[in-house]
Amino acid sequence: MRLQVFAETTLDVTFSIVVKPGRNAADVRTLAAFPVAAAQVRQWLAAHLPAADLRPAYSNADAARQVADGLVDAAVTSPLAAARWGLAALADGVVDESNARTRFVLVGRPGPPPARTGADRTSAVLRIDNQPGALVAALAEFGIRGIDLTRIESRPTRTELGTYLFFVDCVGHIDDEAVAEALKAVHRRCADVRYLGSWPTGPAAGAQPALVDEASRTVSRTAGQTRADPGSPGRPGGASMSGRLVLLRHASPMATSSAGWIPCRRERR
Image 1 (cartoon, rainbow, N blue to C red):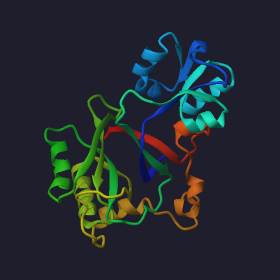
Image 2: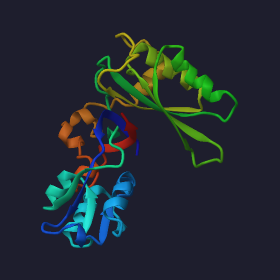
Image 3: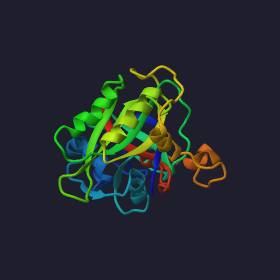
């Protein structure tokens, strides 16, 4: 299923170590944690609960549920999940790196992107032929137009050995002429380009001046693929924001639906 990014937020990474009310650290023999969370508090656990047997959880909320259900003695989770399950905190603000942050993006079914604000981010995934200089040539299309790239990550295509997809984030909106023209040029250089969305991100350096989108038909089609008919059930604008939004995984016992906030990457301030 295709998804599109509509918003982003960045949160400080901190956790709570929780138990049932009345329990203390001496009672903790088993501890549940989502693997990503466990990696971020490994040093703290080694120092304060070295004998605890670590058990995997599907999410931070699931870790709290396991404590409430009596499956484990303690959990690495969020204060919100602890409150949801009526648990007590042995420790709050637990994290090995005090400056760690995680970026989350709000995703949903493809639809009209949020309006251009002048402080936006655009994301695309590029499939580039495995030829010398092909990646440099594609990325240069952003540089020569003064567009700042904020993220470049590669992932294997899983279809052929040695072939990769490149996920690219840049400053600007698809309705910025420079961004639209860059995507058009990249489309000519790549085997495939998939637009992943444009969304507001707050103050950002390098954004282009406000211009009407003058891109050619290639980019118009790219943007048009995200614009559904007003009556289309897949159109995000047809439902309220609350209909598309679910709580962050580490803060809610709710199951993630087809749209919601998902962790994108961990950052340092």
